[in-house]
Amino acid sequence: MNYLAHAYLSFENPYLLIGNMISDHVKGKKMYDFDERIVDGIKLHRKIDEFTDSHRATKIIRSYFTEAYGLYHAVFSDVVCDYFLANDPVIFVDEISLRKFTKSCYEILDNHLAILPESFRQIYPHMKQHDWLYNYRFHYGIEKSFAGLVYRAKYMHESETALNIFKNNEEAMRDAFNIFFPELVAFTNGTLAQLLTGD
Image (cartoon, rainbow, N blue to C red):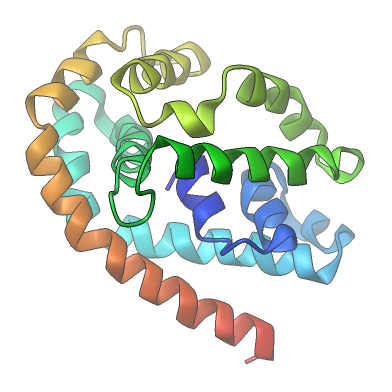
């Protein structure tokens, strides 16, 4: 899952949101340098990723990108899932509701900048300036995200192929997402209950 999904699956809990957003930037025992409520968010992020990686529906989405991008298929799939989430008419009934949600996420992160890992602080200004969370709703946002993935990767050189794959298979990918995401929400709720009770 990508940033918007992890933010949404924090269920409006500021500490879970911080942990969910920074998890990939925290290695090993460094996670225990944070407030235990943020640690729960880091752990939740990793459980979400494990569930996502093993789910049959996300494997379908990834398969469209495999021939062209090999093991990088997962990063494209994650961005695509954020697109479908941003356009989910039940979760975000319109652009205003998405805008309200993403603004709240930025405000929480702004209020905790001092404790965020350095590597996350380096990308966060770009995330906020270019409004990544909101712009996942649009094809041009996906195009920019794909280009950013290629820019940061050593062994990818172009993203136009990925964009065409997405556009040509959007409905089939959406069908897979619609199977996957409700199951992910249920899994996340159950995992969060276990984390908060210490089970």
